[in-house]
Image 1 (cartoon, rainbow, N blue to C red):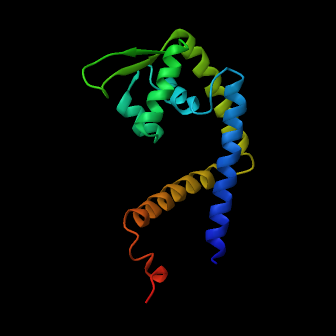
Image 2: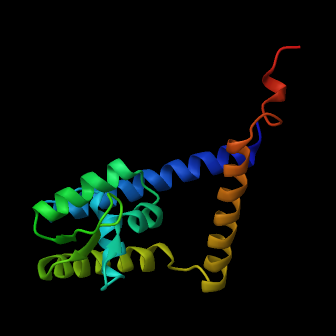
Image 3: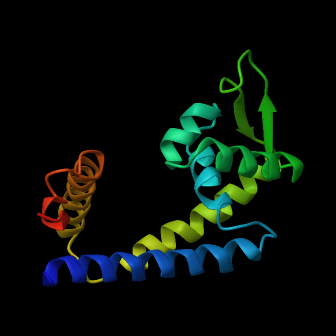
Length: 156
């Protein structure tokens, strides 16, 4: 097996697990779930609100998950839904309580980002994120058309 493949797979899995634990622990302190984190962060950055479809795209979550998260946040009084025609045209805005909560979550996220980047040159971090984005796009292309990649798995 290719060492880079193993290293990438293991590192990404470990990173995902630690991020999930941080989100679970932090959001539970607010009686929220890890899945609420991205939506609150996206809405914090958009005082004018975000449409459902924008949140789905920006958070890279499926519509069903975004729908559940938004319903939770609306029920909790953190988000207000401004209805517009069409299922995916609704605009979602933070309430006053939601702005306070999102600001607190944002402060934790910024601190975690700062701590994660300690001892790393900012230029190296910028390069890392560019490379990570490119790796992701390249592997998405493999996933979209895997025929060539999977040829060695076919029986002769």
